[in-house]
Image 1: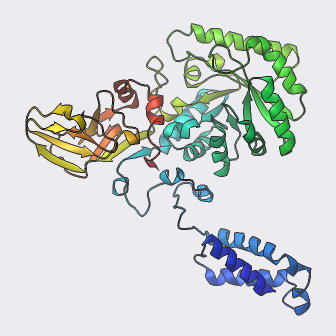
Image 2: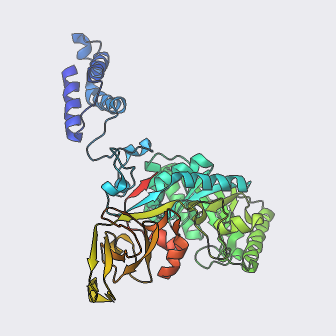
Image 3: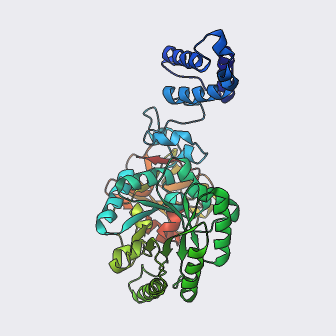
Length: 473
């Protein structure tokens, strides 16, 4: 019967297309020993005993052990230098969030790419962990604002964050599949069909109406675990949330429903990034009134939280039990009126390279529609990035080449755009082009580029396309 187990192992490994690497003599010797033990020590009576009736089950266990011991890595799973835990999961997007391999530079692998300085993320989170006595939630929704959710979350947790915040169910489950065991709060809507799965994965949910309580209770019963709920109060944002007048009654219903745990109470400030703090103070007063009403009924949520990045920086009295750090964790300003402290560093740089350099005579039309006509002989460079990557067509644009600012000419195409290199000495194919970030002493921050594009820095970094690889440093 050991041969049956061997056959099961071989079949399973062939089906999975996995071949053990290294230590093969030890590995197969270990398998043989386990097979003998499982089948009664190798004697005929043992081999025909009860143990051999579960040979396929034992084979599966052995196969898992072989994978762990041999560190099996299939051809479709890239090598993650910095985050080995992520070998367990490899989605299409994650393949574009890897450290470059074989000693190659990003320019040798990609047309354009985003470099994410995880050291900056770590430093920024440590700043906030020391800035407030409250707990820190790292908000990693929207693929961590375009920075790569899993590596950013891992870095933030090492640096002192204790919670992660996301906006969609799949974002929460992505973190769980990557092996993160920290508390996760789904700040947005949870589809009813995903509730049981989210509750089973210990994802905390945000609720604001009675119907959500009933659905969460039913899902909790199906999953066999309590649903951890955070009640959201609309104190002035106007999106979702129970009204302050109805909050206490809804909280009472929550605590009276079996299978539900009143884990948190939250609100969100609409204008904390403005110079005038009046509206924020008004929202804070409404929120405190709700807290008072809850306490009058003997209700106290486990966590109270309201402050986003801006409120964390400008309103210490609104920190409560936890602060939610989003944009500032990435070293980006909450707004023009609420800049980041100097201790915070931007974490993302968007780069490309010159793929063609040529002299163009006077009167030449460039790119679609010939919206730009050369006024004299000009040196033109081609950059392999375009609106399919998130590089906008609208607005007055510049890039950095050779430590100099160079204008973007004509229409931005889907995959390429053109720059004038007259002010750059000796530009050649392969030279680095910085679309966002710093090159030498020249800087092109997200705040400036967003202003040129008629948007905000949040939108800019979140809009860098999925096909742009994230290289984590």
